[in-house]
Amino acid sequence: MKKITYLSVLIAAVFSTNSSTAQDSLKTFKPQTVSVEELVGNKRQFLQLTVNKILDEKKNIGLFSISSYAADYKKYSVENEYQNSTLVYHHIFGGISINSGASFTSVEGLKNFVGLQYLHQSKSLTVLLMPTYSFLNNKKVAGLALIEYKPAISQNWALYSRVQVHYNHDLETKSHFRSYAYSRLGFTYKYFSFGFAHNYDRYGAEKSTKNNYGAFLKLSI
Image (tube, rainbow, N blue to C red):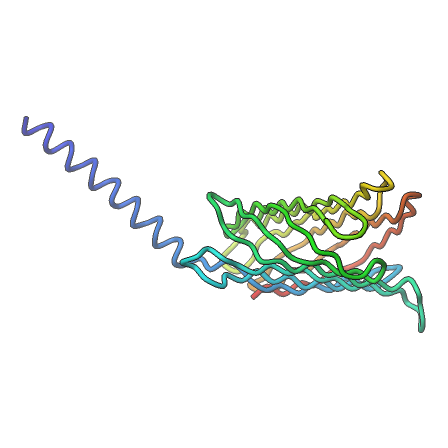
């Protein structure tokens, strides 16, 4: 009986130690909430701003916004682009949330949408999945997927890689409306990431494309 008691105490102590260690690691890691990235490419310049902020921890309500600007190397160009999606999300369980917000592009203006969101974020890995449905005017379904991987090399240095894809489908015309695939590969030093970049954009039912290769610099705080 004493052996069983000692064994129970030992198991409880081990689990207690593991639990406190996990809590300490969560306290020392604060997820990045704001990032700004600039890409200087061979065809155009690109800037992206991302904000993820918890508004009310008790009610599990947060704000997520992603904005991007793209401009050709011309004094005046009708092909310059701006797009923004801003939403409020409510966490349900795990990394899954429901959301509602609005998106604005330089082509179609303001659109309201509802959707789902899955987010996993740790020191080395971020995964974001976001399917949405636009229900006003031309109805569309869209999806955003982002995977960012930063394995540590030393205390201040890490490798940096990211794949970010988006697809927007017009339900009324049953055709492709807008899509892109962005990739990054480089290094992270403290709050800064830098390296090589490639943006691949497609537009409209005809799926006209733009390729942009260059270097990027990203700040995450």
